[in-house]
Every structure is written in structure tokens, then in C-alpha cells.
Image 1 (cartoon, rainbow, N blue to C red):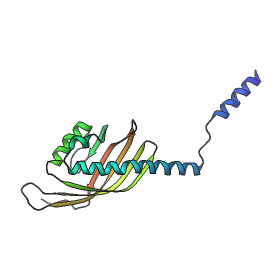
Image 2: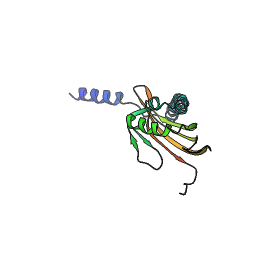
Image 3: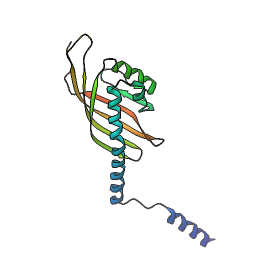
Image 4: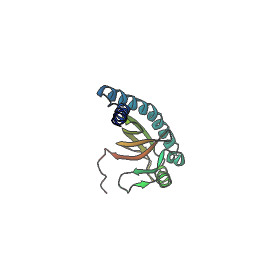
Amino acid sequence: MRVALLLSLGLVVACRPRAETPEAALARQAADRKAADDAIRPLVARFATLFNSGHADSLAAFYAPDAHLMLPNQPAVVGPAAIKVALEQWLAAKPTIKFVTEAVEASGDLAVERGSYEETTVPAGSKTPVTDKGKYLLHWQRIGGKWLIVDDIGNSDLPVQKQ
């Protein structure tokens, strides 16, 4: 009986996964970061193209089912259907946008992208373009093998306009 117990205990100990060494952890993190960066940068470029073409429906497909779009000076919008409506309202002014991805950090199926943007629009009733510059964070998640935006937040670098 003792022999069987010792053999069982030995099998349990032998089957335990070994702790990841610091070197292996750094290598895995670097591989995760590179894979996410390689996947996300082209998605951001495609997003900008679709944004500049006014395709709110295609843009909404970039968002996860429970995604949050957090635009300045308004409540968060949740879910692709509501995000599509918010984007349609935003795109009605025919803005153009340029994104610069500054960093992508990732671990497994989660990634965070940090970047900056420049958006130009011509306000209704004006002929003079207005340019806004700011920064953004995107929380991405790989769902079903596809990277989707879970949280999207950006804010302007410009001072608040006095009315």
C-alpha cells in the first residue's frame, strides 16, 4: 500500500509543469508582443482606411461583442451595434484620421496598443479645416483567432475650447 502511495505521489510530482524560467518568460513575452504587433498594425491601417472612407458598418466589425468606445465628452458606447451608430454620427462630418502605433504590449490573447492620432474635419457651416491631435489606447483580445477591440479610448492634446 505504501509503495502504491509513494508511486502515485511520485507521478503527481513528476507530472507537475515546471516553473517557467525568467529567460523563458522573457522569450515568450517577446514572441507574444511581436505576434500581436505584426497582427495589429495592419488592422490599424485598415481601420484608418475604412474610417477615412466613411464605412461605419465595417469599422463596427473591429469591435468585440462587449466592446466599449469611450469618446471624449460623452458616455461610453457599448457593443458593435451602438458603436456603429456612434461612428455614423462621427463620420457624418467626413473627418480624415491618421494613426501612429507607438507600442503594442501583449500576453497571450490580450494586447494593449498605445498610439497617437491626427484628425482633420471641416465643421458644418465652415470652409476652414480643424485639426485635432491626441493619443489613444486600444485593448485588443484575440477571440476565435481574430484580434478584436475590447476597449477604445482616446483624448485630445488640444486645450478645451471655450464657448
